[in-house]
Length: 378
Ligand SMILES: [Zn+2]
Image (cartoon, rainbow, N blue to C red; front, top):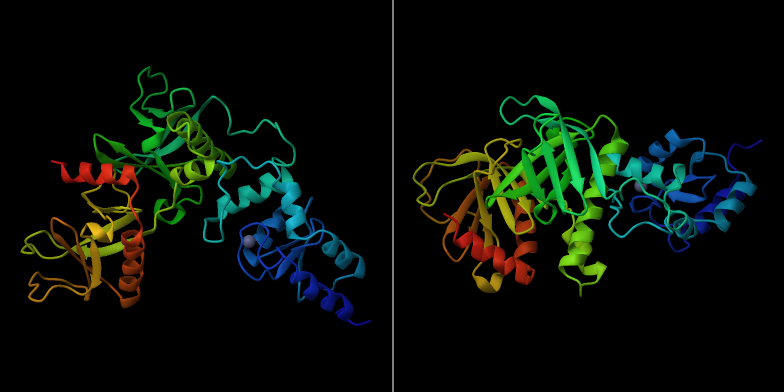
């Protein structure tokens, strides 16, 4: 008996060429090397690891290393990624965040479990856990000063379009009320040091404020995340009645374009370069002393090239301020230049690529308003 069924292997290779099968059914990563022989889908290595944990519904097999039977191959041929998508993703709500291969583990895991284990999206009108008019519960919130996490009550209200949290369990007044249209939520497992760590960023008195939360259960925190998106979409639909969902979806939570350390110097370049943590959130470049700071130390608005914004490698001649890192970046804005240094050439290139992406993009009316706000900031 040969271990490999040659006929089956050849047939599998052909099935892989069919539309939809050339990328992972769950995260879109190219060239899947695994399959679920019970769901009839082709998946990537990472997602195959998640499927292993739902063995009641999914049997994982390597496309190249496992022996495939003719019947299994037949099943793969009759199903495949597009058919499975039509079935398991038939009723995914517009606001639900479908992760890509770049997203964190728990977003992918909960997406896969929601699809195949909980069958959340197979039939219309199903009651979904992130569509309550009020969502209330306890989340662990990082304290501002000592980095300890405290259990805090959070309330997300669809009617008010707000997320509130309470410092004491019996408190009547919330510690903070966040309008969902100023709120961003992004998973930050490495930064927060917890696989379920979520960063909330919002505007408080025109300043950017961060809070860091998690829940012990990956399902709970991902449900909170999608519940925030559901409330945001509803809020935007009411605020912009003429807009299509396609225009509104990009205004929901978004991933930061890039984060990392750079050095920066002040406007007169006399005080030397200081190492800071930078977050590029579309047109806002924020910097922090520590990645987990509650407030940004400063922010730079990055507008469109026609309005006098540009980025280039290197520092102006005669930059005297002391610096440790050598790979310079100069960002010009209509008001002044900002000078940065990166630790390595690849970091410098990556930052410049991301800055250019923003600078090349035309500005929306809301971004013009944001630019004006930045200029009048005290
Ligand atoms: Zn995948």
